[in-house]
Each structure stands twice: as structure tokens, then as C-alpha cells.
Image 1 (cartoon, rainbow, N blue to C red):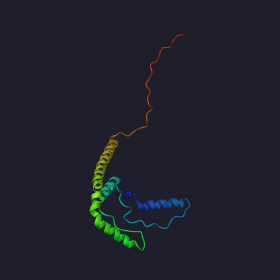
Image 2: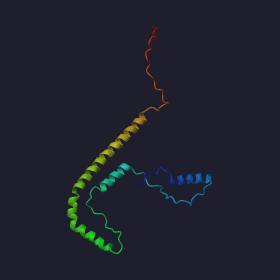
Image 3: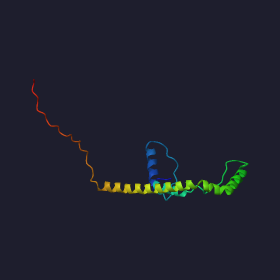
Image 4: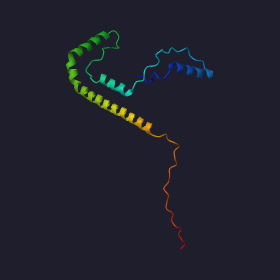
Amino acid sequence: MKLLGRDIPARELISRIEERLRLRGLPTSDPADVPEEGVAPRVDPLSFNLQALEQHADPTPPLPLHTHRGGAGQLVLVAKWAFRKTCQVLINETLGRQRVFNGHVRDSYAQLSAEVIRLRREVEALKAAQPPAGPPAAPSRPSRPKTPPQGKR
């Protein structure tokens, strides 16, 4: 996930870093190839996570078959494939409750994300409406009533 946006000029950033290195007497690296379109656009973490939850809410679709084994690896892949084909109904039944739970988590996350976005907008509006703050004033202390001096006994 890339959280940098196009609002950061990559070429300018690299040239400024190289200039600072030269001023300190450090050799710079070879010229860096920065793509013309710059860095990837900013990704909103809330929408990124919601999209990931939507994509993986249903646990029943199988992941791609693979193995790390050498020579007998093909036999392992065939065994995995045969297990999936013969037991898919059982797998779907077993993971049915998990699919429902994942859907509730996804929906709850979507509601919470919408609330966070709404609250962020509200905070920004309140900040914009607030007059600029001056130097903080010293806290005032409540004055105590003076008691008359007591005489000697």
C-alpha cells in the first residue's frame, strides 16, 4: 500500500536530497530513474481496507494450488486438487458461518469508516470556523476573600 500521492514531486525531492549530500561532501548515487508520472496516487487506508474485506469476505473460493516441494511436488498438487474437487461441498458448509461473520465485519467496518470520514469533515469545518488562536492566556485564579487580621489574645 502506497500512502504517498502525486502531490509530492519525486524528481524535485531526489534532487534536493542529492544536493544536501553534495553539500556534506558525500558522494551521490547514480542518477535515479523516476517515472514521468511520478509516484502512485495517495491511497485512503479506510477504503483500501474495506475493499480488501470485500474481496476476502467469502472464504470458500480456493487459493491457487502451489507447492514448495521438488520432485514429488506434482503428486502433492494432484492430491490437493482431488481433495478440493471431492470435498468442496463440505468445505463450503464448514466455512458458511465464517462467511456470514466476515460479511458482518465488512459491513461494520464500512459503517465505522463512514463515521470516521464524517467526523474528520466535521473537525475540519470546526477548525476552519474557529478564529486564529493568539498566545495562550495565563489561567486566572479565583480571588480569595480577605479575612480581617485577628488580634492577640
